[in-house]
Length: 229
Image (cartoon, rainbow, N blue to C red; front, side, top):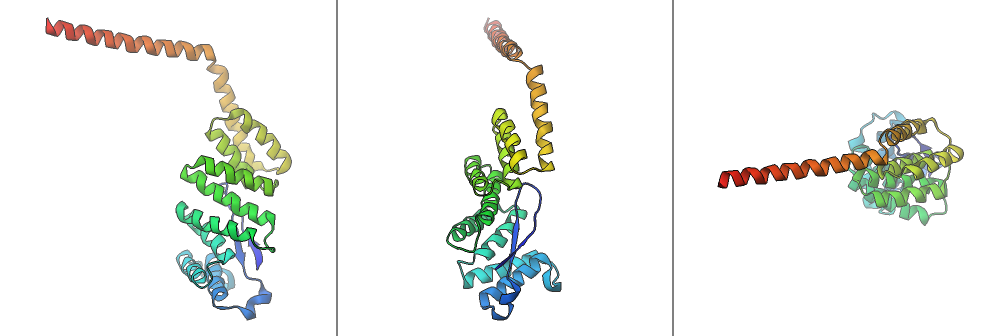
């Protein structure tokens, strides 16, 4: 199988895989179904893009050959784009497992699928799983921009500002990209908030809140006693 990669935004390194032309005359039933799915997903061979039909063909290919790595990877992409993350996780997980057992799938390609899987977990709010898969993707391919992007985003979600800043610097060295610019602005905003809202101010606000609550309770008790009298 040859790689036909299409990169999309939203922090997902999406890879569309297609059959090589050298195999076109020797396709079995599963490969034929996969070829149809690919054509309807991408508009190849003059086909009209029809994502629903593409999914049907990928499902057919997987019924005929459950270990079809490329069909799992492409179906996972479609489900991710449809925000059906549980189904996407199922396909990406299987794609990673199959990739590790094939000599013709590079670590770079495995990294992309792993990053995609991490992106699914991130969207699901399963941040621990997301962190594990995204860091794994970076270890496989340090030049993968999407994985760095997702990790910085994840660190900011956890409010790990120092580590986010450190990883941003590392990402700009290992995988330079203008996409990181959004994080520079977010980090500057957080720095400005921290300088405007120092620890002593937080303490004062906390004490004021406690005093306010105490006064409310005191007045409520006083009102209740007056009513009883």
